Image (tube, rainbow, N blue to C red; front, side, top):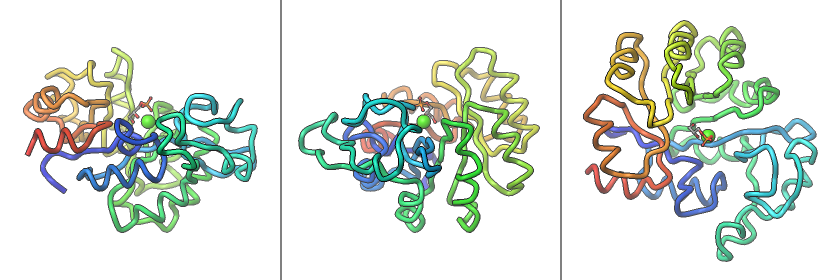
Length: 235
Ligand code: G3P
Ligand code: CA
């Protein structure tokens, strides 16, 4: 790991179809230190990697993710929408990505649907703690997970200008990190994170000038759709 941690956002979503194995491999090749991904549950209770709760934007399927079984979801094309050359890409399961990433780079699992919490914990039962970070905008969910996984690194996401409450909940929960939307970052937030012992990872930063400013301000890293561009610019 370098001095400024780059999370490949949905893999390397700027150059490959988000939340696919091809996107995660692209993030690794670009020099990301970790990957970020989003999780929903299939109808039969399997954690699958997809951002939206519906299929239309990033697959050739229709309707809600949680209305289709894993077998049905696996038949969908998750790459053609991005570019024809990615046709045939499949929706990965979380288990599949964890198996791939274990020896490669850290994984930040953003739980999009609270009902996925238990299944995610089950998959992580034997996973090295230092290799994973579980995050969510749903702070109540993270607080419910904490007693079940005392040593699990947690990240609190924030997209409201009333971020101070979230930051306090993060600290009270023993979270590792605080993940604000980038426009919310200010010297007072950096200071509050430092005082509470929270690592600061803003999202989503594709402009190297902004990334450099955040590094100087005291952020520990950023989420980016283009890790290669940011890495090159900051090297
Ligand atoms: O985890 C950071 C970022 O991914 C949160 O927003 O909408 O891209 O999942 P979103
Ligand atoms: Ca996300």
